[in-house]
Image (cartoon, rainbow over all chains, first blue to last red; front, side, top):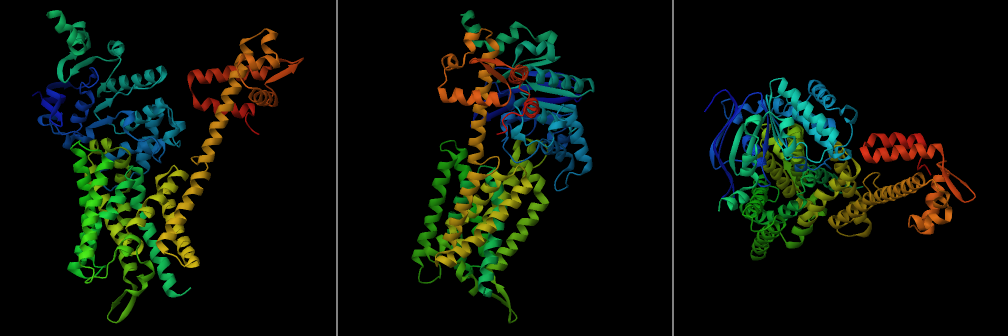
Length: 245
Length: 386
């Protein structure tokens, strides 16, 4: 295992009810890349992210963040879940949701104070949502909700950002705004990993890519491995098999 | 008021507040039904606890019964996790089983203990002042007041200490885990508090009605605020209102206190459900109606904008052209006229400069979906004010 990796995944197998959804995954994600995880529905993309975050326990294998287990490194990692994973009718404001990003560094019991509030306001400004800070979260559009989630991750000031479909249900303007922020993060030396659906934008947005379909198909720089061969292996297995016969 | 009346109201109010706090989180976690399960399945715990301690207010009995509540939650989740039945089915399987064990235990030992099914289901709040805490010959008040008072203080303490963690894990369990908190621990902590509170309130309001105190006040508060702290405060307020209102209703009708409390809570909920400013039924209907008119007005203006030829803009032809009935055409026409969006001469309708500007901006709004823009626009055009 390479110790200089931001994330090192070794022999990771995850199963739901003994049905493997991720099968023997090895991944070494170098520091400072902006990486897309692509694959068809049910390929285990979200599961891979959740396993890295220790939200789902694997049945085999290990994950290391800068060479250490996640539990010791959770302050280094920020997470943007799928927008649909929370109840947007929850009684709270945009600012309050962004403040939640500071809870990790606060730890148990300690309360957020002025400092955390200031960080949250700065993050809201970065995603262009400052004017909506007091808005109840259900009153925000889908794209705005996604920006709030992004701000909540930015406020953690982590080294690694894991994002589960941050472009889902957002308009073109928001998508551009989000990708610009992601590129800025990479420029600042952060590692950004994004579950992504739109294959056309992969070369434009990302410099690193992982093809996933239960097993790892390929991982590496976009310019080297983003090709028809890997796309077919990931998305069109049946087609290939029938050709070989 | 006699001192017994004051004591009963005090107990009822404290029970209501103690129930509203875990109840708020149960409602937000969409776990309202689990409180029903807990309130029933703690019965065997109470009965067995009573055999052992022979004191309904013993802390051991409360902890034992609360443990049954937590076991219920665990069983429901365990059955659900097998994937063979859904959560509501699992709840429906677990709590009647445990409750019936309690019922049989009471029936088999009815002669030995002063617990009966009526008391279990509806509580005996009126009798609460008779069972008093006496230390060294000094009367310190009803035992159940001390019991539920202690539970409330503990609940408030835990809420104060773990507010941030509870909020986070209720809103976003995944993030809570990834930030190094333990949603499972918080979940079972909340379930333990809910169970202990249920046992403490059981004596006063019974198994069926403790559910009403846990769910109805937070449900009302949810419709009235967008702030978790305010929701907790409002839930406590409505709980107390229902408790006190119910007590005096029972007093007036000479009826069951617990039954009256629940009825009052029901009526209060109905009022809030109908009249809550933003999320109430009438408000929602009003908003939908307004949206409908807005869309109709826009359709109408857009039609005018798209057609220069006079024949398309004749008042009478509009019915046919946009397929509206006369009444709707008339109301939309009047609205547009009142807002100076159109002028009518010889039954031919023309857009004014203001109407043209509005149509342009409205279409722009629909295309770009910027919600801030339309608010400002409405203000500028004095639209929909009367």
